[in-house]
Amino acid sequence: EHLGQSIIEAAMSFFGFGQSADIDIVLNDAETRKKAEHRSEDGRKDKYFLFYDGETVSGKVNVTLKYPGKRLEHNGIKIEFIGQIEMYYDRGNHHEFVSLVKDLARPGELTQSQTFDFEFTHVEKPYESYTGQNVKLRYFLRATVGRRLNDISKELDLVVHTLSTYPELNSSIKMEVGIEDCLHIEFEYNKSKYHLKDVIVGKIYFLLVRIKIKHMEIDIIKRETTGTGPNVYHENDTIAKYEIMDGAPVRGESIPIRLFLAGYELTPTMRDINKKFSVRYYLNLVLIDEEERRYFKQQEITLWRKGDIVRKSMSHQAAIASQRFEGTSNPEKFRGHNSEEDTS
Image (cartoon, rainbow, N blue to C red):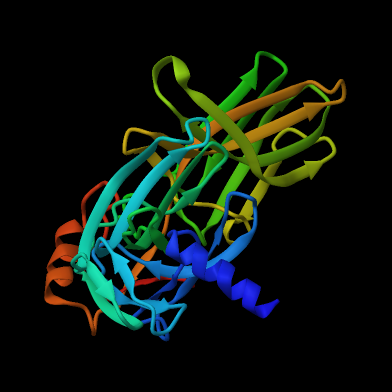
């Protein structure tokens, strides 16, 4: 039986079927690099190595021959660093926004297992990794041993977080909502831009109440928009429901709001990423009266991932960049190494 198995294996490798080698990609800083949890398409959460924009990606590709003493002919060995966007309704079409290649070996043959070093220096990673309802943005390394009939390849997924710094200018949101002669309320949130671990602090004032309100809540709605023109898809997802009150308010009453964002699964706001998709967040104030009528008012908020630069080990270049960006009105990415994510 054992002989039969080895004859089949020999025949398969002779005709180029079956993999005659295993490939493994190992990052140089695998021992020390932080990992981040990220949801895969099937809803599972896994941990992946975490990278930021401008960081170098380096490591080793191990090619291990399965049959020692047997040569492996190949058409070249290479490694790629790829950032791509994939629409679920257009599976075959991958939009690559980053595509880097390093050749590790010219066409020839391997007579024994071998290790190849690679380095992609200061790689631009402009967007945050994202797995959504209709779209996925992913970064990965792919090592390939080129073969005449079937290439041998291996992928390693990485996660990228984009860090922002916001200036102090962060205006509050004030809104009035009313139904003539029936209801008049005013609500206020302390800011319009929140980092992912922030707290939304607000107040609701009832100026006129002539309808019987029985329930009131704030929802955080995530809206994913994909496609362009006539083929635009919107997916609305209620991420959080926060009950403000149960029962009827009276005129002159004010109700405080404190909504902690850290407990929810949120991403930064993403606007028109590579002209392919957007992810936006809204605060939705919902009132329900005793006849089950719903009244609501929606307001967009901006979410961002807080970057906390480690000053002492910061590169000179990053220091200059961060000074330059302070005081600008839009979020800017920190460039250079030693950007740390603020998890406080």
